[in-house]
Image (cartoon, rainbow, N blue to C red):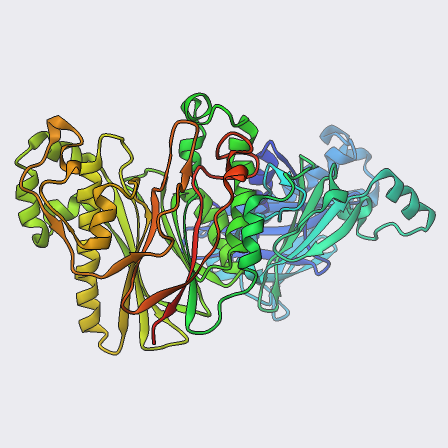
Length: 604
């Protein structure tokens, strides 16, 4: 576990060991000694010391109860070792050192607080305080306890012209949005010659910026076609208020590649250029195809054999996904098949930088993917959110006891149903523009197997009945709110089957063909219903999922048609666009599903 708040050790080991990147780290012009001193039993000290003409970052991780003099001895040993190694002086030749070298290698070290030398027998827990001065040889360092630090910094493996580059940043004692980011692109040979001719070389050559051009500032950088073939470099400087930490500079190993050009979703963006006006909100539902399911031999050879592997690679697809999602300017965005790592390390942070917050719930135990619901902070306030596992609702929730007994009449069905760890995520969002209005959003991804219409019908029934139950509870708890339910997601069911009928009509009888979609698991005398008044916001398009072996409408946004109305449905890509490269996903479409985008308005 990293114990240094400035953690050169972490930065060096994490970034230097990564085979995709070269990293540089140095202290800022102000000479600081960074001390991490938290609730753990460790302490860490980081500072820069000049070895010949190069600033070298030293980090020491020690036990809190150790005394200062033990650390100082270790510091002398390590620094002198580096100095003698750089000067190619062997220990046995120490007697040949010049007086200045000998003085340098004796390396006096002390800690001073308020002009008083700190007792070296004190333990670290008592010795280190803000405002102290650490003296190492002729150098003096301002001691900063628990300063902001970049623990880890990474760049995407794939860099595309026309698509924003977002770093993966892990910081301590500050927030990512407090950091300052500087993006550089490598100079071309012509630019180097021009810079040399004009004597305009960068003065920041100590971190290698002499061959680089400052391209942008901010959390992201969008290269253009003129940058194809260039490397990029990112400098991240952590801040907490006015307290400045250690900067980390990271150079990409790969170069910027040509992007795919204009993607069909960018044509859809023409309808979503602006955030919605007051009294309406834009709702997005999208199965983004988890890397977990795309990155396999089965996916490459059976599901998507037409799609070149580099376009199935999530390092490519995530650029398109982020650009697509941001361009919709959604006020509520519900996603299915969201990789947990993608959400945690990238998507949630990118969304936050765009004033959109989110919640994530993983499907099952350590599945690696799940559901995400984002909301625009200027439009909605999160009151509460959680998720339920549908099979557990049937097994344990008293409101489903009757259904449970009906299902158990076929033990084969019940056993299979209970193995499906499908979840529904839900979030209660209050409108910031209409304080007496709220939406209760359900988000789900039902079981996929072709012979499982009966399972999906039960799952959808549990979803809508549980949502109905929540609506009753929240309406009693928040009597000032008019709460409108919405249920969206990938239902893996076409409009001609029972799931759609249940949502729209509120009832499916026991004679539905869905109950016998698998003869061995057929259900008898089962009826499902709900009392909500719902409509499909995007209707029933010809398909929302398109592959060589299947196409159909599987995705829906079911909304409360009493309190809400559809103001606009964003047109889907044309059939020619979808089939241009056989099917989706491909170089232009990042998922095998199409995003549903609609604008809803409060009725009053």
